[in-house]
Image (cartoon, rainbow, N blue to C red; front, side, top):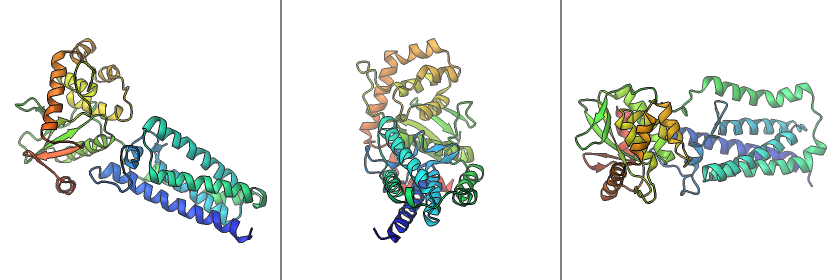
Length: 346
């Protein structure tokens, strides 16, 4: 093998990994800050970068996972450039982490991210190259060499944890709703302005990760423009809501929390715990919100609650609401651009 190839190949792979991590960080931030904007990386329910960006492992120790990856590739790039033996343990750890993250996506998230898998492939290729060449021919590790290779990546992680605003942290209302709220004449819960300039219907499904982020953005917008905007919660669950299949449990939980004047608090709790976790413990949610548990559980299994949930589902289907989240003003569905313009203008 040409002697230059073992040195150039890991450099090229590390640069490629750094670029892909940069794209992934852009997707991660866009998923949280601009949830109504589609991503080229979201193909279907099986290949969905957005869903992975919303998963529990997308942020570790207050640092988004793409930036952990970027720091790792910077370290491997420096080790490759200096022909340091450190490339092998760094690449080996990166490959193991890639396998672990793939298993996390498959077993807990239920979908995979194509760009993430690109990072994983590059990490494994780097590990193979490091094993075949740098493990035997890399330069010995000294204190100065280790600092040169690891110092910049460590600074990236430290700076991210300290400086970057935590855009991924949800704004929850589980301790109380800071803006007016109530019910419409039709019995739909609203929040925001008592005399609104704009009234927006927001159709959601509590199991939808994109809805969780979209509603978080809505809450942030209401915190700033709650005297002009009113949001009405509407539901479009993905399953039928009848007693036979015990369906729409999260919707029923929100409805029953509303009976105890805690609808929006439960709404926020559900979005924080249900997406990606079909077995979310509603009793735990009721307990955390200070609800009367026997009354809450009785309401959840009340036939009238099933009727309410099924009526909501049928109304959404009649209105031809298919995707979630979907927004309407005066019965007219908004386009993605219109939603963006509305929130940006408030």
